[in-house]
Amino acid sequence: MLDTSTAIEAATQDLLRRAIETDYKGRIALVSSFGTESAVLLHMIARIDRRLPVIFLDTGKLFPDTIAYRNALITRLHLSDVRSIRPDPAHLASFDPDGTLFARDPDFCCALRKTMPLDAALEGFDAWISGRKRNQTETRADIAAIETGPDGRTVLNPLGDWSREDIETYFDTHHLPRHPLESDGFASIGCFTCTRRIKPGEDARAGRWSGSGKTECGIFLSRPAEVPA
Image (spheres, rainbow, N blue to C red):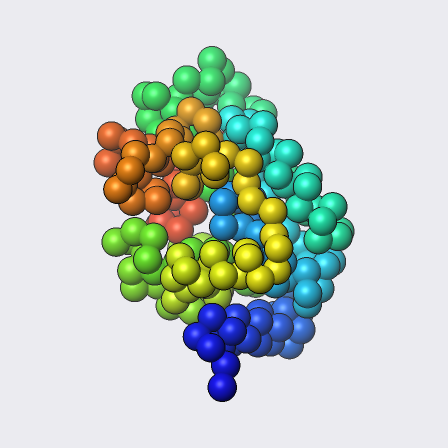
């Protein structure tokens, strides 16, 4: 009999294989932050199709360590289509010329640097894969394995019911490298402007947008009726 970790890995691999090779063949991408847990999905994808498009949102405010980790995983896993997507320079010039929008309006900053670039990058795709898990935040507690995203595309959450222990077991079993900032107290990593180390006993995502009341960047939330032209 398969142990729990082996069983959940096999079921997840089957879900991904079916989506990539059959249900959405040629019409699906993985969206990855190359954060502390990202290597799991990237490794699972590489075992199916190393040519699958991987969309990486380079906000212009990421830790250099994240860029280095991205490059290391691309080489390690032989990923051949990682697309580093950056914000529209015209939008930044108009709405964040001095780079301090994150302090005044973090929601709008995320829209300019993540949501809008992602929507543009997903043109031509019918579905995309996310690394969300139900145990991360209250807002993610009810996510389904397959759901309709705010832009109308299908979103797969293949790690939805994975526990932290499942993630750790996968890293250890497959000898995957860790994000270099994880050992320095960063459990969930986004932009350096809005990410801090967590304190003992804090939730893994407590270091994201700390003190602002914000818990999501916005790519999983409803789109505003109007966006800047």
